[in-house]
Image (tube, rainbow, N blue to C red):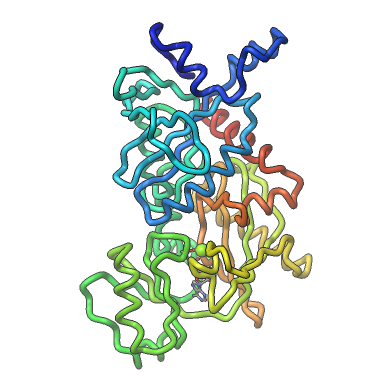
Length: 376
Ligand SMILES: Nc1ncnc2c1ncn2[C@@H]1O[C@H](COP(=O)(O)OP(=O)(O)O)[C@@H](O)[C@H]1O
Ligand SMILES: [Mg+2]
């Protein structure tokens, strides 16, 4: 809940309540509105996926049910400062915004200036990549004593790291695409030897990134050095992975094990060689999302079972999207697990739930309630 000083309480309420209370006649309704859990919707952030986070968060902000939740939009700028915004529209405006600083152990933040106390009931991080999806903000929430939507610190950090994810899944007998790791500063591996071990094409990618940023398809050994440099712009560890010719299938998971639910299987049709950043987000992209994927029922069931197991093995809670490759020969690999999947207009996670009968608004409500319940 937002706690305000006497001096500015009226102004504050007007600022953040998207439904003017003066219009609310019914007393019970007014009480319910006053008692709504307060949600800190956090977006932006220091990662290369800052802009994607804004698109996702704009959708979430629009979809969230005002009657059920009071929402405070909080923008993390590219330097990592947190701003409580006056409003959140098409553009992020810092006009009238105040900075937030955490009061550890006190389940609250202080504003700068004015030292107002902000006491959210839950943090809803719609952030991708560094400091958002990698356990950092989840750790902060733990130190603040505020529940946070989605996976906790350990699972977030594990799933963010494509190498760590593969090591754990392979250990449990789940197939992952063969790969090698490369550290920044090491020599470029010999092309012929790589061709023998993994074959071309290869995919080179940062170990901890997303949205295909820093990902390259490497058709020839001569492209390897540049591809590694591109990946190392985002991470000191890169993966050199065998390129597979495969369908890209994705499954959404919702809930806290053992009562997590598994969506239908969706399929990505990338516009181009692979599902690159542009294929995902460029306005002119012809990439498509097919829900449900046209796939045999028994195969879909098998994929959903593996998604469920992966979610449990990695310690996920709240939500995650499990991404697969399915080759023409029928070989199934888990590619990666996204603990804060996209919520943009084209994003698979909300689409999969819509297809399973859970609307965007209901999905956000369920995610928030899961976090609140976990805390209790
Ligand atoms: N081993 C691979 N074989 C074929 N395509 C791949 C491979 N690895 C990645 N890709 C392509 O690159 C895209 C982005 O890679 P991914 O591992 O999902 O990273 P990100 O976390 O950035 O989404 C995938 O959706 C797929 O189109
Ligand atoms: Mg991906």
